[in-house]
Amino acid sequence: MAVSLGGFFMSLELSALCPALSFDSVALTNIAPDHLLMDKGDTDTSTDEVITSKNSNLGIDATTGWKPFTEMNASFNGSLDGGTLQQFGMNVNGVVIRRTSNRSNYKVWEDVVVLPVALGEIGLLNVVYDDLYVESGIIYRYAIQPVSGQNRGPLNDPSPVIFDYEYSWLIGEGEKQLMFAFNPAITGYNTVVKDSVVETIGSKYPFVTRNSNVMYKTFSFSATITQFMDVENVMMDKSSLFLSDDIVVDSSIDVTSDYKTFFDKQGINDADNYVLEREFRNKITEFLYDGKPKVFKSDTEGLILVKISEVSLTPKAELGRRVYDLSCTMTEIGTVDFDTLIDYKIKKGVKVSGLE
Image (tube, rainbow, N blue to C red; front, side, top):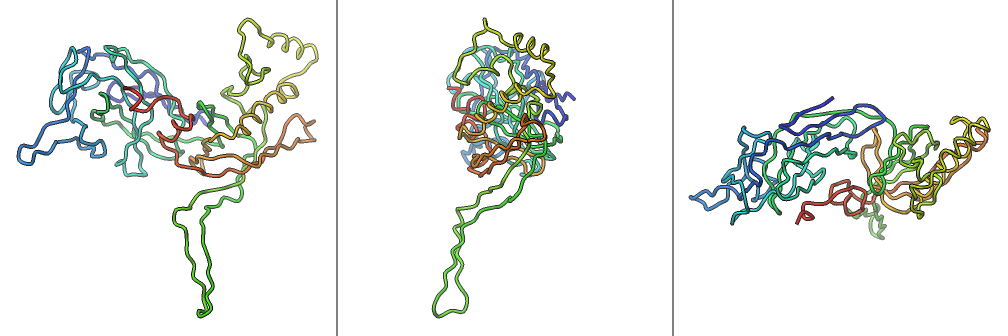
């Protein structure tokens, strides 16, 4: 399903295999001037206060309103100049996709991705982006916002979108997303708090105090791992499947045809391919043991930033030890937000500060 938001197009995939909101062809066509100049808004002469947009969380640098004659509805609460850089203003050098949800009653907006725009090329912006960090059953509203230096422009007013997905997922460094569709299970889902119980001599009952700063989730996760769970070929990229991670892929060497000949000769199909299962297991083991933060995502638990520990792999004897069962412990280490994901290198892209 494609949704148009004032010239900003989104394609929404509701398949359980693709739990992401896909932004397809973010195109700012019909922008007449080469550069857009935005100021900080008008001033109320009676109070000398800067008039900002209705989105109060955008700060004093926000401007309001768009005129309807361009696809982006380019109009500002102050001035709209085309051409070269003017004093008191800066050229638009980026576009930010932002979102809000029903959790905040659509009051709090957060960045999804920052798209840098080269000088004079705002009308040529055309990208595809998938928002992986969405919760099943949550209503989102997405908007676009121009950026000029550290100043942000107004947001458009999009329609709400809601979608559904299944199973459990892990998102690692560089947005490697892996689905756990076979026998995923969570046990011992706890919120950890630190309480101290002090018994006194003169009192029948103890005093209980709590460290209010400590409150995080921890749980045990298990699933069956097999090459068939890698629906996006995160680990099963044929060009690097049979190589160690520290080996650079040489495009002139391709062993996949040799393996295909071997599999055909031996009558080995995908259902009982011990070689592919072993190589996939090696890749996922490296992924789980790398010690780096990851985002755990599921329809029932939502999004949790975790570190993985106590990883254990047990072969299933009834399947010839080709397929293994995984068990591990996941511990929450922070919040799932734009800046944190960028800092941990889980999310691709830059912050608005990186545009300068």
